[in-house]
Structures are given as C-alpha cells and as structure tokens.
Amino acid sequence: MNADDLFKKSIEDKESFWKEQAREIQWFEFPIQILSQDEARYTQWFADGKLNMCYLCIDKHIEDSFGEQVAIIYDSPVTGKKKTYTFNQAKEEISKFAGGLTSLGLTKGDTAIIYMPMIPQTLFAMLACARIGVIHNVVFGGFAPHELVVRIDDCKPKALITATAGMEIAKRIPYLPLVEKAIELAQDKVDHIIVYNRKLVDNQHEMFEDLIDYEELTEKSEPADCVSVESTHPLYLLYTSGTTGKPKGIARDTGGYATALKFSMKYIYGIEPGETYWAASDFGWAVGHSYTVYGPLINRNTTIIFEGKPIMTPDAGTFWRIISEYKVSVMFTAPTAIRAIKKEDPNGELVKKYDLSHFRKQFLAGERCDVATLDWFAEHIGVPAIDHWWQTESGWPMLGLLTFDNTYTIKRASAGKPVPGYDIKIFDENGYELAPHHEGYLVIRLPLPPGALLGIWKDQERFQNSYLSQYKGYYFSGDGAIKDEDGYIFITGRVDDVINVAGHRLSTSEMEEIVSSHPEVAECAVVGIDDELKGQIPFAAVVLKNGSGISEDKVEKEIVQAVREKIGAVACLKNVMTVKRLPKTRSGKILRKLIRTLLDGKDFQIPSTIDDEKIIDEIREKIKEYRA
Image 1 (cartoon, rainbow, N blue to C red):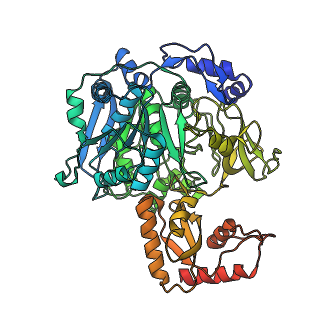
Image 2 (tube, rainbow, N blue to C red):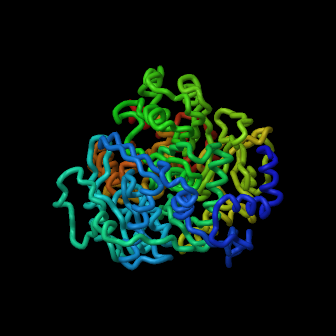
Image 3 (cartoon, rainbow, N blue to C red):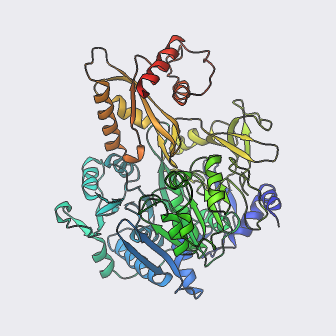
C-alpha cells in the first residue's frame, strides 16, 4: 500500500485502519470498541483495551530476547559523562524506582511532577510512573518557580521528582532552591519530594527538610510489575501556553498514543527496530516525550539522551560527532539548532571530520524552516532534511511525508501533506474551505486520530472553547496555512498570541502580565517578531505612567529580569521599547499584529478600525531610534 492509499483508507475507513495499526503493539486485552465518544461526545480510541506503556517500551523487548540491546545512550558533553543502558539494565532501574514510588503510596491515577535535566534518571522516572499507572507531568528544567507553582496547583501531584542541578554549558543551575521556592508558593502541599543527587559539587547547603534521596529509594525498593491500565487512562499531562496566560494541561491517553507512535516510527520516520534514533529535544517538550522516550523505545530503537548545546559543547560539530559515534540513522531537531550550527560553521568544515555514511534522514519541526537553512543542509550534509508540523496537542505529526517506501517528494518551505488520520482543511473566517494558494485557518475534521489529546486536565469547558468551538465538527489548530494544488501545506504562523521561540511555545499574554506588573508601566503589548536564529522572539512595547522619572534603559533592564525570574531564560525577552502610546482600535483593542508588522519592517495595510493613523509614524520613528 503506497502513501496515498494509506491516507485515503485512514480517512474513509477510520476504524478498520486504526484497528489494523493497533495490532502492531501488544495489548493485555485487545480492544473490541475501536472508536467511541466520551460523555462530552469527544473521540475515544480503543476504550475497552488494556495495556501498559512501560511494558511496550521495555519488558516486551526483553521477552522477545532483545534484553542485551542498548536501549539508551547518555552523552553529556557539559559534564564529560557517557553511559549506555541495555533494555535489561533499564528495566532494573525503572522497576525498582517504580517500586519506590509504590512504597510511598503512589498508585494508578495519582499524579507526579518531574522537574529534571537531560539525564537518564528523568527517562527512568517517566517510565516508572507509566509502569504503575501514575500520571506524570514533566516540567522543563529551565522554568522558574512560578511555572512549577502553576502546575502543582493545577495537577496536585503526590510526588515531585527532581535533581540537584542542571547544566547550562559550563554553568551549574541549582534546582533545589527553585523547588523550595515553588513549594513555599504553591497552594497545595506535595507529599513527597524525591531528589537525584548529581554530585557535581558539594551541595549539602541546598538540601532542605524531608527530601527523599532518589538512589537510596531505588536501592531499597522491590521491583514493581507493570500495572494494566485502560487505553484511555492518561499517561501524562504536558502544559502548553494558552491565550489566557494560564498554561493548559494537555492530557494524553495510553493506547491511542502507543498505536500512533508505533505507526509514525515506521511510516513517517522510516526507521527499523534495532537502529539508533535521536530526537535532540528536552524531555520537557512534546518531542522529548514522543520521540526521545516513548516512540523510539516502543519501536525498539536505541534512543539518545543528549545534555548539551549544538554549538558550544565543545563546538558546532557536536551533532555530527554524535551521529557518527553512535551510528544514528534518523535524527529530529528544531530548525533553530541547524541555523545556529550554520552560523558558526558556514562552510561546513566541521562536518567533514565525521563519518555520516549511515545517516539517512533529518527531520525538522518546532517552527518553519527557512529555505537558506535547507540549502545549507543539503550542500553540507547531503541527506534529506524533511520539515514537518505538529503540536503538543497532537502528540505526533499532523503534516509530514510518509518516508517508509522512499518515494516521497520534498517541497521546500512546506511542512508536507496531511498524515494518515488527519483530515486537514484550510478555512476562511466563516468556515468555508479555501481554494489553493489562499491563506486561511488550518482546521482538522473530527474525529482526530489516535494519539491526539484526551482534553485539558480537569477543564472540559476550556478544551471545548480553545479547540472545538470555532468551527462545528472541526479541531481549530490556531495556525494559519496555505495549501497548494498538490496538497502540500505551508504553515504561516500562529493566529493567536502564542509565539514560537526556538520550537518552544510561549504565551505573550503571560509575559504581558509580568511586564504590566512593573510599577512604572501603564500598559504594554508583547508580540513575537521574526528572528533569524530562533524563528520568533518576544518584543515588548511599553507605555510608562505619566510623570514617571525612570530611564528607558532602566525599565528595560528591570522588565527583562522580571520575565526571566518568573518564566525563565527560555522566554528570551530582551527588547523593551518605550512608546508614548500603543495603536488601538476605536473599541480600545491593542493592534498587536500592526506592532509586529512594523517591528518586522513588512508591508501592511492601515487597519480600518485604527483610532489614530498618526501613531504609525510615531512608532516607526521610535523603532529607528531604539535600534540606532
């Protein structure tokens, strides 16, 4: 069956198609009910099936006599450490830590937050939770205490699993002071704080009362067996930026997700069991969940945990060194990483040092990849660089190319075609499908395929309003897009106030709340402007209170610091421009798109609703002055 036939069957005969794919993974009880709906009439896949994700990732391969295959490679240029784990070794670590969680009273349906760096113990903690039916929420280690507090208060974890520190190139980032602050600020008490001591420095002064040592808990605990869970049992929660400023807890199921990931490894990424697959993503992002942990391990691929940066640990040849050293067949990263490498090594001199003969495909996602970067990659690496598109909400690609039979055609700057299961349309504001080459809203006809979000944790109303209310019978992606006559889709960007910084979705409204809390700021707007390296970066325009004596330099410095403290360095807000007033509609709505267009220096039409056209020239002059 070719790619077109696969897609056609997935849309025209959904139940038969996904039942067939569900047979590619091992169930404790194979589902009879393939497609159903929950109480709110939202899609459920394989509702009466039973399985366990940790079993699929680890135990099954041991039962199939692959216990001595390397499952995990840890490579940390920032600490100089390397380590490998076979499936047998991984099972011992995971099952004993799962036993430790059980001994603390955690059971199926409880939640746990994992706030850890890129180390094997993070993966072990995720799979240990999955093993006993505990719902995990991984929080990116670069986030500040405020972000932890939001998640603690929303998902009410019984345990918080952390490490003593992360590493940012040569700088140690202590986690425990951040955790202690978050615990102090959270409304809800966390019963157990488990800490993995990395012993990078003497850190006894950072310890606080009632901490449980990760290694001691693991060593003294009896191994736990895999618990059978329903297909619709939440495997994890992953919080993504929302337009209200409060992150949304995306809930992921188990059976549909496992089925979709297995399908994607074969048909989208075209990788065989036993090969090495590397997704260079933090565990805290959706890619880290799907393609550093669950997808590769379900498919019996060796996965790589990389703790470092693409250009500074030690140089811009790091990615090629890892691909060469571990015989990586397929890699997945954000275009930002390739752009950073290209900037440091424009002539590809460092590439020539390594043997990349076994490297077949490079996948890119997180933001649109520019043509110049694709050209550089083609010239110096010589393997296909395949852009594709998906969201935290989907859990796996929605647009891409099926590469399993090597008959695909890449169109540069396109994210590919709809993948099987995703019936994608481009609508205008009124819900009419647009002809090719017209920009509109990317929407997906319901039901969504397996693996997509179960909903928003404990907030059905917000789920409906955010995704299902704009067009009846369709999922609203929040992205603009154009389709061409061959069915290829070109993503044009977010249509709400969530911006994409180096593949990380961040809420500008959350940043605006922080900026506007500055005592000298009267009002503000934060927009995402184009950035050659990161795709987008936030830019704040602020109006100071009348009579304020603060200098523009000082207010910029203080706002940048405040955003860094409350969201983290990942926010990348470095530009704060003071203006006399912000452009608004006659009804008082700030024209953020106009501000963004002016900052990007792009052509625009004066909005018919603007209350005073003179403000456009005022802002243009201010931009020149600010950038001088």
